[in-house]
Length: 120
Image 1 (cartoon, rainbow, N blue to C red):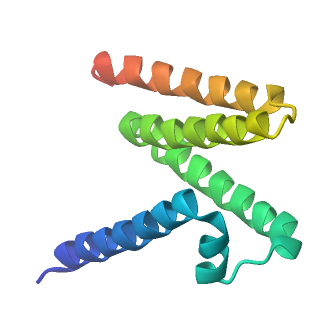
Image 2: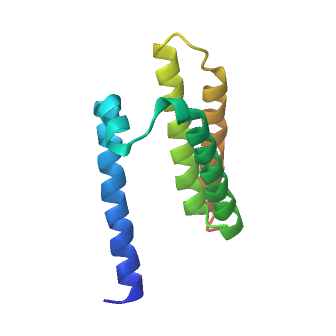
C-alpha cells in the first residue's frame, strides 16, 4: 500500500467515525454528549476551538486556491449556519446572525462554483 492509498484509507476511516458521531448527535444529542465526553459547562471553550479550526480550514482553502475545495468547505459552513438558525428558531431565539452567516457562505459557494464553471 502506498502512502497515498493509506492517507485516503485513513481519511475514509475519519469520515466513518465522524459520520457515526454526527448521526448520534442528530438522533440523540444527550447520548452524543456522553459518547464524546463533552460537557455543557465547557461549551463556550469548545466553540472557540471549533471557530479556530474553521479559521484554519478557510485559510488553508483560500491559500491553496482550489475552487472545488472552497465551494465544498463553504457549503459545509452554510449548512452549519442554517442548521444553527433552525435550532435557535425552534427554541424561539434570534436567528438573523446565523442566517446572515449562511447566506454569506452560500455566496462564496456560488462564486467558487461559477469560477469552476469558467475553468478556473
